[in-house]
Image 1 (cartoon, helix red, strand yellow):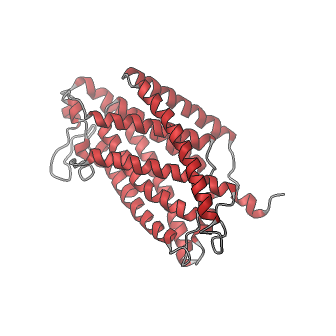
Image 2: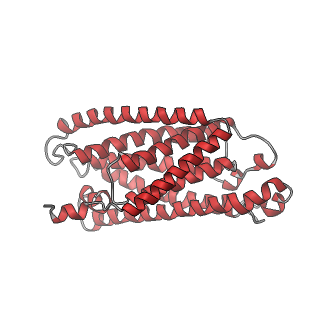
Image 3: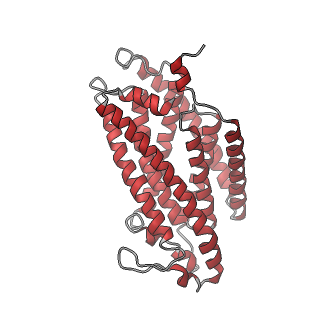
Length: 338
């Protein structure tokens, strides 16, 4: 018989949503394979997918051994009480470790490409000028797309079939699907600079999120834990506000909505290329202005709404920790982990 707390923590499984999301995931995976077949990159994509399955498994095994050792030795005594002794907690810890590795490596990859560009400060400069002028984008951006799409497909698979479930399971599942769709559409329409910025904003903020979760699973809170979880929580809120709640919607507004398809004046005084410019390129006008741009905008707005939801959860955790004097580990378990 489950206790009241066990029932409260249980993540409810919805068979209907599972079927819908599984069909969407399968459709997106098939679409991705088709797109990369058309561009001759299918074997590279499949190779990356296989590689990441191997790398993730290796990190899970390695972090499992390391985490268990730390938990049984350095964190054996109260108030830590061997935090990874529970199988569910250990599985979440190892899952967060491989995600941390992915986000650090991909964040650095995106940062390297962005060096010397002003697309973060002026997202309208990330508009597809090269595409309109018939030029090619930097090959390294498409290499990043290969790697990122493989990662998102593997991540979505792990989320559905491998990882422990948190209370936001279906929200995160939807986030993965929407992101894969954005990757595919931006790749097909060659909005790759926009895609690069989306990757960058996600990975940079996710690094802090992963570190905060890892510290939380190890119960590194309070004076005994050198307030590591609390400090990382503060950094997380700051990075979330900057990258997910400011830079991300700014990209949507100035990078896409104010660029395609309207003519408008941008913050630096320059004008967008808008519909009048696209009309000079009839091969791109219909698909970009009527299909690609609007669909990408809707998907990005959906992602932004999810970022607001998670931002609200972060504030709830902070409120209960600061004003109700509850332990951040217990609050996170009740509000988010399940």
